[in-house]
Length: 343
Image (cartoon, helix red, strand yellow):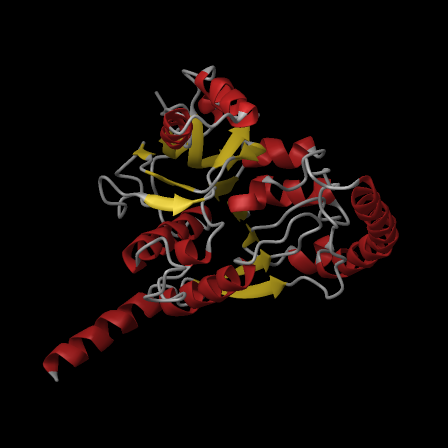
């Protein structure tokens, strides 16, 4: 009984520390690829806010009706007949035309939707914004005005494909600090912890590993961010080397994969950021490129099944990072975040 009362007292103290919780607006709209983990991310962010008492969460969800991209054009197989390939090509051509027409209508719908949901006079009362696995051009009604909100003292937090968002809009990319370039197959990494004392990474254990889709980031300047997690070699290098060795042993030729490995080997000395934070004017920005997979976000997702690649403990560490990053960006946590700490 005494132990239970103690836990309740600690919980009460935690909630009282945020007598007036901050207000976060979480955006999960996509005009490009849509991750299956978005619903999981929405659930986790709402839970983190409720359990911590540090912030409340409102959402700008995805409207229904996004057309499905038909994907890549068919490639004729070695033994495929000309008639069969021609039929596939014609079907793809029609599907592409139908998609392009439907996508025009969809973009008009998104533009009107975002003009309503993200109008500056409606969002200026929020203390911060989270772009959780957003992609593409979000068609904000005043994108420059949005950046000025961050510079004026708001928090901005982005996860995973938040860096695969607004590529043509340099104001967004400069504010974030880098953008998605590409990725290879999902792989386990053990990132370097650049600042173990920072509130965002202080709970990350030494030797922490995670299995996820690891982004290669471009337009990134070490000198302009405070590094949190990173890699000094390409995340897929060892995996690609092992696969190449297996091909050689089995006398299998794969020129494309061999060329990919050669390209990666040529990038010796390149740094691969995973997570960072920075100050933008009076505002704060936190980015974590992890979060493609549901089991990175949620320790309970498909528990004890073969679909899980990450243990519950790995997801719990990710959640601790996200919560601390949100609190740091909202100025509820302090930590030295001087840029240029990445060797």
